[in-house]
Length: 142
Image (cartoon, rainbow, N blue to C red):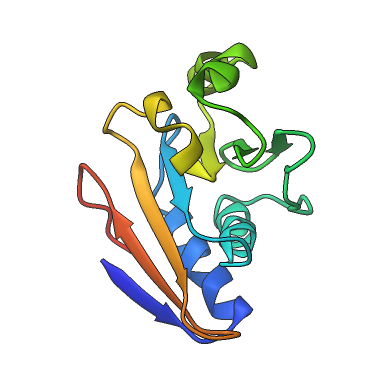
């Protein structure tokens, strides 16, 4: 599925719409260049999962947790050297906790995924325009 957005608000709305169809234990792997809108997409996801929390990039903390109808574990792999470091901080424990795991910079940890994740690629088309491509092993309707 491909979505074109024209503003940060539309990018957030795309994330919100996707999140409404997610279940506990879902992994969402985000791909996109710096400034593509990954964190904006996650802000929308958090809203879609009923979180009142402020969503920020976890670049320096590696993972942020947000409360909601389903907890959200928001990872940023920009500074990690590979999947071993992700497993070292308890990746499997986060998955087992029954929340939605959202991973920015997924290209840095390809070995962490088993093929069941939802892949979201965000491409910057202009200052405000984005092309968001969603691919999943199973159909996700939104």
